Length: 150
Ligand SMILES: [Zn+2]
Image 1 (tube, protein in one colour):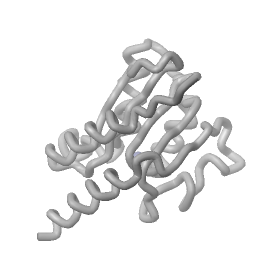
Image 2 (cartoon, protein in one colour; image 1 turned 120 degrees about the vertical axis):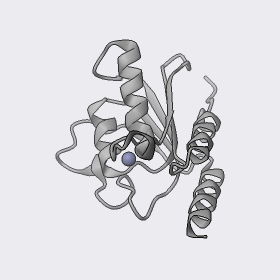
Image 3 (cartoon, helix red, strand yellow; image 1 turned 90 degrees about the vertical axis):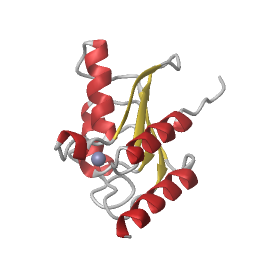
Image 4 (cartoon, protein in one colour; image 1 turned 180 degrees about the horizontal axis):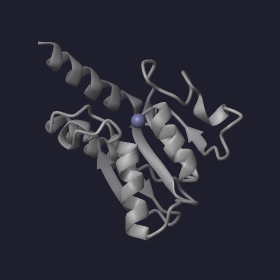
């Protein structure tokens, strides 16, 4: 089977988030057959909700669409390393594979910080593939925060 990356789609969601004035992070959830079941970008400002990260919104949308509380066998693509909150949500959702783009030394919780998936309390860890299309994600984030500082 050939590997099809859905990171381009996640990057489109990230750009849409930036256009709304949100931190540019995008996420896509794909089923085992390679069909997109949910896509989302950050909406913390729009929704006045600090939990409205792209991953959380995508997981909520996928579960709502499928009418189930878990996403066993589904894969999640996100443009930035998930924070500890999102990593815990990914674990609770039983996501099969996590593909992410840029590393996040500030708030990432997968390869650094809380390292949620390697914690003994973590009951389900997805397979993790990092650095997928990291460059465009990093550039989008850099641009966004550079413009904010002006
Ligand atoms: Zn998060």
